[in-house]
Amino acid sequence: MSKNAKIPEERKKKIPKGLIYLLALIFIITSIFAIIVFVPQPPPSNALFSISIRSYTTGYEKSYYSEYSTTIQTNLGEIGINAEVKSTDYATFLDKVVVNKDYDLAILEFEIESAPHLEVLFRENASLNIFNYKNDLDNGYIINKIDLAEKTVDFDERKNIYFDIQTYLMANILPFIPLFTPVNTYAYWKQVNNFSAELGLSDSLPYMYLSDPSKEQLKVGIGYWNNIDPLSSQRTSEKELVSLFMDKLIKTSPDGSIIDGGLIKDWKFENETTLLLTVRPNVYWQPDVDNEYTDEPFTIDDVIFTLNVFKSPYVNNEFHKYDWIKKITKVNETTISITIDADRETKINEPYAYALDDLSIYALPEHYLNVTGSWEGITSSTKWVKFSSYPFGTGKYKINFDETEKGVTIVFDKFANWHGAGVIPNVPTELSIESLWINTYRDNYALLLSLQNNDIDFAIFGKDSQIANSLSTSEIEIQHSPSNSIVVLAINLNNQYFGGENNYINTTETSISKALAVRKAIAYAVNREQLNQGFHDEFYIITDTIIPYGTKYYYSGTEKYDFSIQKAISYLELAGFTAKTQNSETSTAPETFWFSLIAIILIPTFKFIRQYKKRK
Image 1 (cartoon, helix red, strand yellow):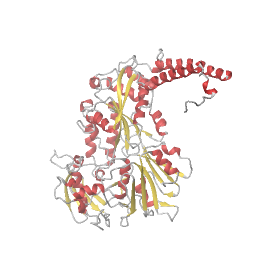
Image 2 (cartoon, rainbow, N blue to C red):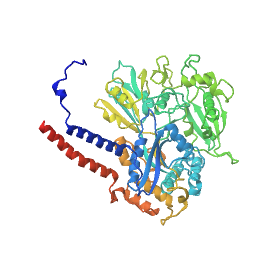
Image 3 (cartoon, rainbow, N blue to C red):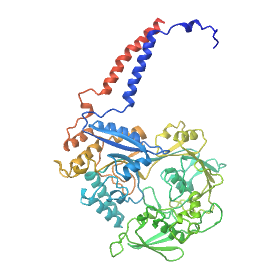
Image 4 (cartoon, helix red, strand yellow):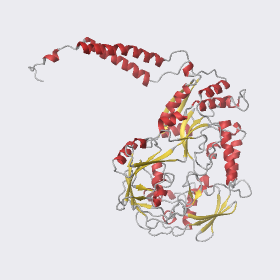
C-alpha cells in the first residue's frame, strides 16, 4: 500500500471494547473446553483399581479396535474401574501383548480355520497363549479335552467335546471376553448376477455373469495389497486375490465342512491312521511368467512336494502343525497313502481328527520350485524368489503381469485350462467373465465413491460393515457374510486384580475365585450391543465363545455375559470390593462442573451479542 493512500473512514473506527472482551471470553471458554476434552484426566480418586486396555491400528484395513477401547474404558468406569487406553501400531502391539504379555486387557482378532486348533491358545508356553493360561487353573481339564478332541475321529463325539470345552472356558476360566464374529461386506451393481457373499468372489465366479452380454470384464475394487505369495500373504485383500489363481488340496465350506472343489478328488480312510488321497484328473498348471513351462499337468508329485514343504522347518514357520504326517507313500501315479501319528511318544500310531482340515492348503508346483534337491536354502533359489513375486496356480484366472502394477492394479485373464470343478453340487460351471480388472484402494471411502460413480462394478469392503450403508442408489446390492475370525477382549490371567494369586483365593460362592469374580464383573460391564450398534450398524454377530459364530464347532449354550451393571457390581462385591456405579456417586464430576460453568458464561454472552446487534 502507498504511504499517501487514504484509509477509508469506516476502517478508522475503533473496534468496540465489548467485542474485544467477547472474543477474549470465547477464547478462554474454548481453551477450557479443549483441556477438558483432549487432555488426559487423572484417575478418579474413588476408583477401585486402575488397569490398561491395549489395542492396535491395522493400517489400510479398517478396524475399530481403538474405538472399542475407548468405549470399554467408559463401560468399566461405570463400575469404578479406571482403564487407560494404549493404542499402538500392530508391531508394537505384538511385542507388548504376544511376545512379552505386558498388558492387562487387550483387543485382538483370531482367525480360526476349519479345525479350531485351540492348543495354540491354551497349551502352556504355546505361541499364542497370550492369556497366561496355566494347567493348574483347572487341573489340566481344558488341555486334556483339547488333546482328546484331536484324536477323536468321530465328528459328533468331537463336536460334543468342543461344546464341553467352550462351556467350561466361559463359566470357570473366562480368559477372554468374546465380542464379535466380524462380517465381510460386498457391494455391486445389479448388472452383476449370481454372486453369493457366503461363497465369496472366487467361488462365486463360475456361476456369475454380467447382464450386458457385450461386457467381458468385471471391474473390482479391493483394499490395499502388497504381497500375493500364497505362502506369506496376510491381508484379507491379499488372500482374496490368491484365491483367484490358486486351488487348495482340500476345499472347505464357510462352516468348516469338507466339500468338493479341491485338487484332491477322492479321499478314503483305510483305518484311523491311514489316509488315501487321489488327485483330480485333467488339472493343469498355469504358465509361469517366463513361459518356460506351459500345459504342465498337476500330478501326485505336486501333492507330495506340497506336503513336504509344509512339513519343512526351512520353509514353514508352522511346520509343527504337520507333525501328524509320519510317512507319505506313493501308491501309484494318482494316489498317495499318508501314515498318521498324532503322538510320536506312544508306540502305536495315534489318530488325528483334523487330517483333512489341515490339508486345506494351496498346492505348489513341484516342476517349478523343486530345483535344489535340499530344503535348506530352497527359498533363496532363483525360482522361489521369482515365484514369490510372480506366482501362478491351477485356479480359475491367471495373472496378466504385463498389465499389472503391484499395489495399484492387478489384472486377471480367464484360464482356458481350468478344471471346472465348482463348490455347488450338481450345478454346471462356466467362467462367463473373461477378465478381472482389480483396482486397489487404501481408503474405503474412495472405494465407495468409485462404486457410486460406476467406475467399478464390484466392491470388496472387507470387514467394514458400515461403509456400504452410505450408498445412495437402489441399483447397488449389498451382501454380508460371517468371517472365520473372532474379536475378543483378552484378559491377562497374571494381572494382580483379576489374575495372579487371586486365581487361588476363594470367594463365598463355590468354584468362583476372587480373580474369576472380577473377570465376570468386567464381562458383564462391557456393552457389546453398544459397540455393535455404534461401529457396525448391528451387522457384526455378537459371539459368546472363542469359536466364530456359524462354524460347525460353535456352541450357543455357553454362559452368556449380556450387559448388566447390576451383575457386574454383584461380582465385584463377591470379590471383596465395595463398588458403586459412576452414576450413583454423589460428588459432582469435574467435567460436569466445567460444562455447567461454560453454560453459565455462554448464556449472558449470547444475550450480549443480541443486544449489541440491536444497538447497531
